Length: 132
Image (tube, rainbow, N blue to C red; front, side):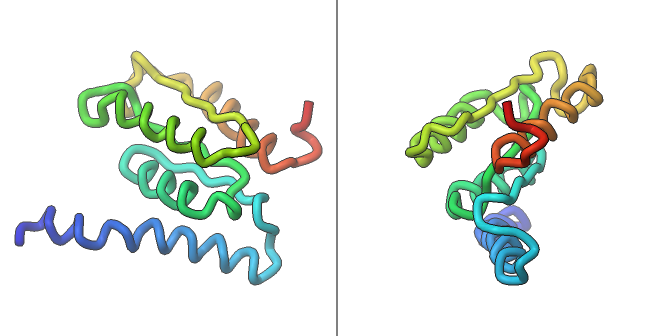
């Protein structure tokens, strides 16, 4: 089995680990279910996406970033958004921000992008300073 076969065989453990971390934060009374916000990018974004979709009761918000370039086709992000909306019976917002010029890192205004993403991460789990 090649290197990618080994990596793919263990891929599920990465998102299971992320879920276990969220559970430990709740068990340790650091936070409550639904008050956790996660963020990650590129392939790590897919890991956190799976964790958020598999344990939606733990996560109040997720920001998963990847540029619109050849390594991750746009339809992959579209499928993630569709799954998030389908798993979301309360109709909470799903933010899909496509960085058309950015690829994975070029040409992005990171101050604005980080501000938008952090505001979303505080707003959705209910931080009082970020409510409309």
